[in-house]
Amino acid sequence: MPTTDRRDFLRVTTATAAALTLPVLSTLRAAAPRAKACILINMIGGPSQIDTFDPKPTAPTSIRSEFQTIRTAVPGIHISEMFPRMASIMDKIAIVRSVHHDAMPIHETGLQLLQTGHLARGATEFQHVGSIIDSQRPFMVMNPLGQLGVSVSHAQGSGTPIPSPSSYTVAPDYIDRGVRCIVINQFASVYDMTTWDCHASRGSLSSTLTDYISIGHEFDFQFTKLITTLDERGMLDETLIVAMGEMGRTPVRNDRGGRDRWTGVWSILFAGGGVNGGQVVGSSDADGAYPKDRPIDARMVPATILHAMGIDSQSHIPSVQPIHELFR
Image (cartoon, rainbow, N blue to C red):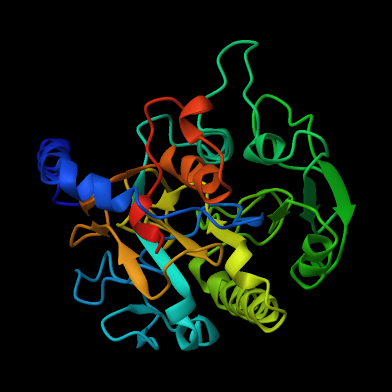
């Protein structure tokens, strides 16, 4: 099992917080938001950080990925071989490698925290960031089945489902027409289909790490095409793109060769909307188990989305700061 324990994690967290002196925080907060729209991609199932955006090629055999690590266009940043197109435009992408939360390691908690900044409590539900961004018009939800299929809170009542076999292709058109927030659910469920949920449990959860080859190459193509299309149309600088799984996966593979649910640390991608690409924010420990530096609470992701859109995140997610260093 991973060698880093919770006490080490807390020591790192405390040290990192102490390092953020007031002058540094002042500098980080200086970036002005510039996004006018956002596209949020839910990588349903929770991709393994080690097999995607935070490879650990020198880790023990039980931990390291079977996929090779490749260089990117930015010296010093390496990702999985599944993403050669993404690697070629890494100067436009920022990776946050230290996202975590301490709630239950289930899909619903991650979806709630990343899209509302809160956990649902009893009958209390919280606004999706898309509803906050544009309260006058329901945000658009795109997924393979053209229906809502993924619950953010107890029941996601907001959002207009848009049937689309190619959500990444049509999303820029909707943004160009004035839509301010689009949510693309990469899959409608984790059951009875191939997703990032790589338990390798057979039955209804049969996805394996081998399935990452097809999933990864498809995501690499679509995500890169989305960024380049927006860039070519002069829309990237004002359109924030966030690609996020709702959790990570266990560093140590299970006895079936898969990886189970894990919220200790995982990686999320940001691009466009004023994001300073070609950088990595935070890092995980040697095993890819917990944050090593700059721990990013999952609630900071929706706070960052709101900040990028020029909305006071504190009004909606109190006491949670955006990831300021992502922006110029």
